[in-house]
Length: 134
Image 1 (cartoon, rainbow, N blue to C red):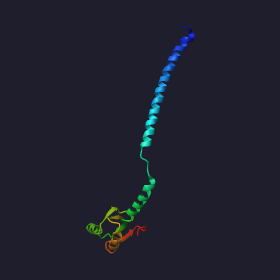
Image 2 (image 1 turned 180 degrees about the vertical axis):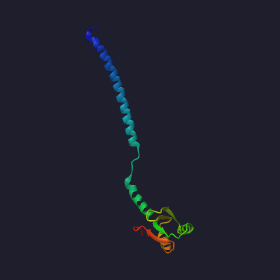
Image 3 (image 1 turned 60 degrees about the horizontal axis):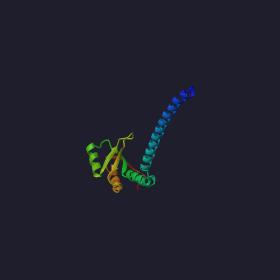
Image 4 (image 1 turned 90 degrees about the vertical axis):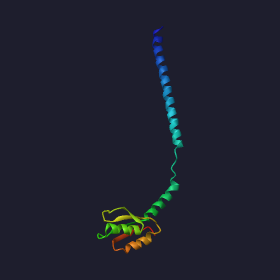
């Protein structure tokens, strides 16, 4: 064996080994990219056009079923409960920083009549509905 071939043989062995590892790495990378692409293609796409109008009208409809009310200090909890049950309303949250409660009514159609009846009650100090609602 010549000195040149003695050096070439281990280098060729290393090159072959690296080539095998590179092929394995490339094959793994291609499989991973294929799986990723396949999953991306299979994922459902969001349809914003059809849901935007529905979401906006649903939110507006929900806001029209709400009102802000301030109860009198003399009104007892039992009287407040009777008043709310009579109008089919419940408290969403409150009192806020202004002492008002946010009410939600069961039916959008009954809100104007319920607000008119509640306004005439002595235990109600103020009653404000959404100004954008009919």
